[in-house]
Length: 576
Image 1 (cartoon, rainbow, N blue to C red):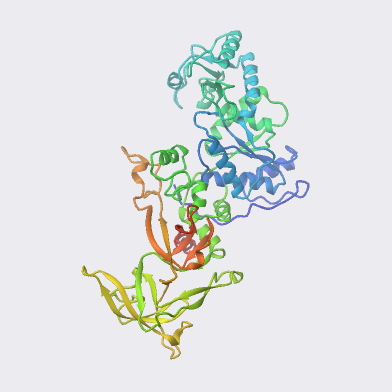
Image 2 (cartoon, rainbow, N blue to C red; image 1 turned 45 degrees about the vertical axis):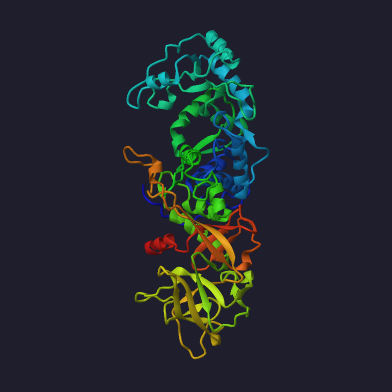
C-alpha cells in the first residue's frame, strides 16, 4: 500500500444547525450537509461504538476524533456505546480504559455511557418479530457446519436442513434457548434471507448464539447473546443515530443492516457511511494481534510505550493535541492506504517543540575533570527553558569542576570533520565555557574512564574575547549535582513496514524489532527532580522524553518519546 502524503485539514469548526451549512472538508461532511439541506435529518447524532475486548489504539483515536469532531462541528451529539455482546472476551478493565482514553483526548460523550446490553431485551423481542414473520429460524448446525455450507463468493451456499421449521417450532426453540435448555454451540438463530446471495453476509447470517457465560453487566440473566451484525444497526436505530460512521470493512455489511431495519424500523433510520481505516507502518492494529503481544509477553502490557494503543502512546509521551493533529492530517479517505509512522512522529515533534522545556541529560556518561577550575567552586549558569516559547523563562544550572559528557562526544583519534572533543581540541560547553582536552585516562584494559581538560574563564558566556571560534557545542551535567536516571530508549516495534503481511511459515511476531527497547543509566540536571509523571522534556541534542508514571524521587525514569530527527519533515520538503 502506498504511503499517505497529505496536508493538514481542519475539521473542528463550530457551527449552529440553523446557520448556513459550512463548506465541507471531507466526503462525510458533504453527505451530512446534503442531508441537512434536504431535511433528511434536523440535527446530527453520531456515536463511537467500541467493543470492550481490549484497549483502544491509534486507529480508534482517529475514529474518536472524527465522530466527536463532527458532532462538535454541527452542534450535535456523540454517544459512547460499548458493544458488549461477547461476554467471554470483555472486561471491566477495558471499559474503564476506553472511557479514560476518550476523556484524555479531550472529548465528552452525550449523557450516560450506553451499552448494547442495554438493548438485549428489545433485540430479543425484535428477533421474535422476525420469527413470526417467518424471516428467522433456529438452526441446529454447528458453527463449522454453517461455515462449510455458506459457499464461496462465486458459489451459492446450501440451505440448512432446519431452514423450513414452522414458526411455532422456532418460537418454542428460541424461548428454550433463552431459558438455558441447550448447551453452547448446539443451536443458533439465523435470519432467513437468501442463501445464494452474491453478498456472503446475506446468506442466512447468525443473529443469536448460545453462550453460558457471565456478562460483566447483566450477570447470568442471558445465555443467548446477539451477534454484532444483529445488535449494531438496531442499537443505532434505538439511539436515534443520524449518521453511523464505520470503517470500510462494514460496507458489505450495510445491505444486511438495511434488511434488518426493513423488518422492524419505522421513522428515521441511521445512515451508514464508510471510510478508510487507519493502517500505520511498522505496527499492527488488529486487537487479536495486540492481545497476543500482551498475553505472550512480547510487551509489558497494553500501555507498553511500543504499543499503538492510546495508553501506550500516552505513556510514551504523546499528547492529546499531537494525536488530534495526526488525525486531522491523515484526513478521511475512501480507500485504504498505509500511513508512514514518521508522520505520527512529526506531529508529536511539532507539538512538543513549543511545549517541552529543554534540559541536559547524559545517557552514556564520561567523567571530565576540569583541572584548572577551583575544586570547591559551584556557579550557576542560565539555561533557556524553551527557545520557541518566550514565556517558558530560564533556569539555573549548576556548574562545577567535575562534569559528565556523552561518551560519543569524545574521540581519541577522530576522523576529519569531527567537531566534538578530542585531545588538544576545544569545544563549547552548552551555556558556558570553552574547554580543551589535555589528558586521556584509561584503565588497565585500555578503556577510557576519564578526561582531563582545562577551561578558559574568559568564555563564560560561550564566546571568546579574542574572537576565536569553536565548531562544536556539547551538553554536560555537573557530577556533584546530577541525578541518576533510568532511560528507556524506545524504537519501532517491528522491522517490517507491514508486519501483518507475513511470509509463508512465519508469524507476525517473527518481525518484532529486537532493539525496540534499550535501557540505559544516565545522569540529568537537577531541575527535573520534582517533575510529575507524563511531563514532557526535550533532552538537548537527544530527543523528546517523558517522565514515566512509575518514576519517583529515588528512581527517576524517562521514556523516549521520539528522536530529534524528523524524516517526515524532510519528505514534505522534498515533495514540496
